[in-house]
Length: 381
Ligand SMILES: [Zn+2]
Image 1 (cartoon, rainbow, N blue to C red):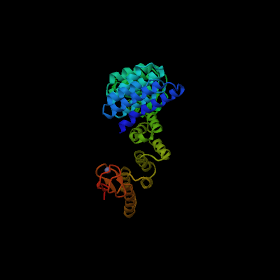
Image 2: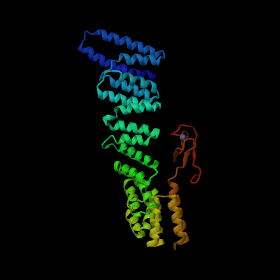
Image 3: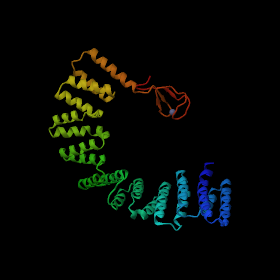
Image 4: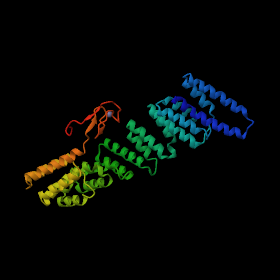
């Protein structure tokens, strides 16, 4: 049934177009008759299950021009989405045999290239995309990069990136920068590798990967000042990676004899919230430059706001040295653990992992019956 629906789509559009044309030339009924004949024929093919013949018929009688081409493109894209790549390729190739304005030819070629990628015919995809590359369209460049990331041809991708002067799309900037980083990984000379990483950063100043790789090089060369600069930049562009750089950043400050500066940095950085890795480091420096009691207080407060197992271990470490009473400590731990448990689901689906605090006889996620059961494991019931 779905088949029928989307195959009738171009028919409806084509019909509308022909009707529009006929209203201008009302006496021209021959066309209308021809249309109905071919329409019926293709419907018959379709109902007989002869899908290929039906498509053939449809694309032949839908005269290709600027007002019907969208319909052809929609049909071909539907085929592609359904995984029927050969049909999508057939329609797009048919369109390319027609006399069309350059702009439309480029659009069809882009779609044909996408068909080839999906069908795994990478050689054809590459040549089709390269034909329209001189238009310097970012969409085309992105498609070519998508293709080269499947085939892992980073250098070829870089050659394509170099054909365009500047990139505007954020996604394309990100892909382009990663092409330079991937290529950098393949180079044996550190000098050449660093040059590629700097180009990546020129294209996308937010490229965490390039910043981290440059920081690694600087640390290897004992250039802690430059390593620190790159690492602090990561905190600016993407805080979510902060846990990954906490150790390296501390290492830089220690080697620069700036431990107190690091402590002050963590203090100023604590608003908005630090990631757990940084919070643990902050507690360590509070203990060093203030007191164990202050560190313990900071950790307790932090854990009350966001229960976390790693921070909890730090709290226990600090508690060993603190002058707190045993009762007080046990009470703190009890509160923390129960807060932690409140964040855990009471039930989970044994089939798909769906979590919930209420019982479902049928899982809302995978729809299996009696699979949502009381949770098990470390925080289970
Ligand atoms: Zn489920």
